[in-house]
Image (cartoon, rainbow, N blue to C red; front, side, top):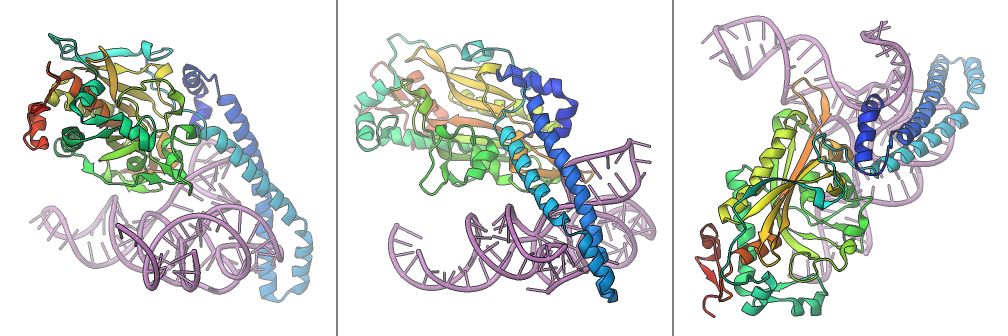
Length: 426
RNA sequence: GGGUGGGUGGCAGAGUGGUUGAAUGCUCUGGUCUUGAAAACCAGCGAGCGCGCAAGCGUUCCGGGGGUUCGAAUCCCUCCCCACCCGCCA
């Protein structure tokens, strides 16, 4: 959603963002819809004013017992009613048309988002460690997992189809350990409040964070009209929907470990082997609700929170700034963290940290009262801190040994009940 | 699934057809007092939209939509949501 007043005064900036998004200028259509609506409202207001004044006089006349006067006034306003109703109906329709159009538009882009077509044009901004070197040919995670007998894609396919996995024993433990470890990093060291929130939400919540109405095919809808969250960004961000917070409450930092569900309908044939792209995966999510003036610095800070996970586990990664063509719909600026995956001999996305401005706040009607007492929309940020399944791939592949066992980095061992190597006893 | 009761301002909570945008309390903001703080006291305090340089004026909003009426927070219909009780299940 956008502030129409701001838009009127900043048409070029608005259109520039939409052009960079590749959908062309949108302000003209938006203003056209808004102008029509405003014209209706203006004339409706006049009619209502007339009606209200007459009604008041009728009331007074009746109170005085002046029946003649009352009758006269009644005759005068006889046809007003229909006109008012007509005006109300047009206003409703025009407001709805404007809303529908606006809900389908993407967020503005931050001015420093690099231009580009697709992921190949993303800009690398930093690296941590060199890609891991091996004195043997490193395997992919599913080769390792299957050889260990702890990762079973056939069993999951039998009960659920493709893009699911069954983990057993020490690998199931590894998944749990990673989630637990990361959630602790964010809550103990970075001040996030741990949250356990619903995985099933109303469509309004999905509209709030921007998954709906445009991307319904990416998520799963239940038979009673609810939606399985594709990320707990949805639950965590909607925690503040329809609320007026105080500036004293901000910033709010929420983190949760949750399952996420994605239909992956648009990615047929992509990453079909292994756990990289699943219908169900778990992820530690971070959401920060803050004031507009703090948003930019918070974005960088949050990137650091996500990177911290890889630094502690000593997994090589690089950070990229997403280009205009690769950016998600609802965000203004995004950094991805890509971990080194020796099995694929490349970096793959494991975390995504984004700044949303007030775009989601407007959709959710999430506001706060400033120190001066004014009511303004909050700003939202979110980032993965990080995706468990993908981190597990990176960990397995980077820490694999020649015999197919997998070493556990020291900080994780206590979460693994002291285990130092997975599959060592084979 | 069956039944009952509800949805009012940041919060709590009055208000059942007429100058009510809405009593009252709390919170919050400013002030008085105080060495400072607390308490007490005084004052202020909803949001959106339109017009206006501004002061301000107008209008809408008491869950959503529709209806009755000259006039609706108040009456009727409908949908959504919430709470509680019963049944069922973990």
